[in-house]
Image (tube, rainbow, N blue to C red):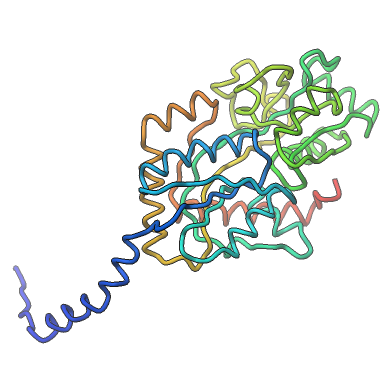
Length: 325
């Protein structure tokens, strides 16, 4: 049976009046952006995060209808840029590209964290890039098994470079050390670019560059293992930690956040534009040629995944405080 309800003229008129009252706010949201958008990167130029951010910025400009300026603010393993984004004016004009696990681990490991997960509205995750261990191309370390054997025979004598405490490559080191019963000396850098230079110059013996960072430019370095759940399509000949007998999976997720009090309509606009970017064949191709795996996840679904990661890393922190490893 079809049921109908009488239409009251008075509520209809009230609804019309309400639409006039809210029209300026809606129009204001529709004018977004009204100035250049700033995209903060927490690491030095030249690394995988920076490359992803600059590629995304070019495509976001087309979808959002305004300019996007990338601003590198390296420091504190990415915390400087994320804290700046959390404190930014809530109008959608300051974004940050995040790194997982740093986005989750920094508030756990710091005694006075500069941000919390709830300080952001989550636009979308863009890509994933497995952690990897690399050595100089002519290193005497032949492969991953050789590295573990040398580290076991002489603890704390092999240097391992990362982009900071709590980053994916540092946590890969922590987990590999625990699983293999070895100990390397951790050397943090401000970004993948400076770290790679140090590795090529043999100032450090092993570098925690991501798969995409190595395969995009293999000059001077040689990947010996990576932390994906399976072999990477970009490095089919490189073994995984799991294949080497270690129950370790680790990588970097890169996504976009904005401060939590940003108007819902602006967040929705950013999500819509980002979704279109991640569906754009040209963007997908750019990620492919940069050896970065697409891993698009819209804001709400991404936040759910981060909540689970937060639980897992808090459990790990109770067992082993990685800032001390």
